Image (tube, rainbow, N blue to C red; front, side, top):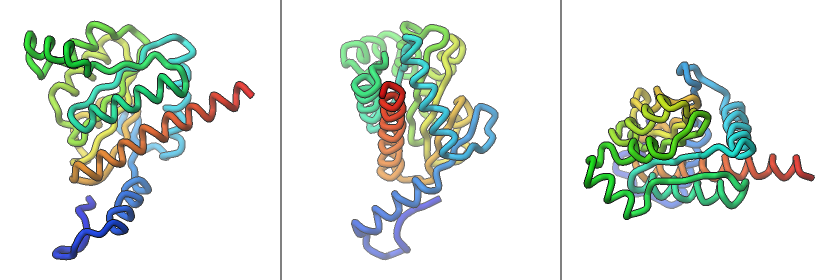
Length: 203
């Protein structure tokens, strides 16, 4: 697991960029059985899945806390704008505060999934630690309702969320900034690839 520059050495911009590049190059992708998948094959599979959800009029739900909520929101925007998918998050402050007040924050995304998820929908769950209870509950409920799941995690390789997805993208760092930066790149990569495939098919 990457932790930064050698002990005692100052952080430099170029050193930081090099670490992010290395983390992305070492990205681990696994399938629903926990088996390793070639990264390019994993991205191709998820890209095709996103387009199939769009074509079928299915919903793509995204969940995350804090910085991961921002990544979820940005990725949702790109999915809507670039491939015209029916993507949504549950970060509206009125909904978020109402559901958390009535049911507890541990249930806030689970309740959102329960309200909106239908069989055949997709769920993208983003969590640096892969241990957030509200994300885990949302994913388990989504699977019960027939959704397929993509996870983006970091920190421990054996985190719980990584065990739950149909496709799982794991960044081997224990630093929030590094994991979140990598996750943001992954979100852009998936949406940009999907948009490129869509344009080529329409040409």
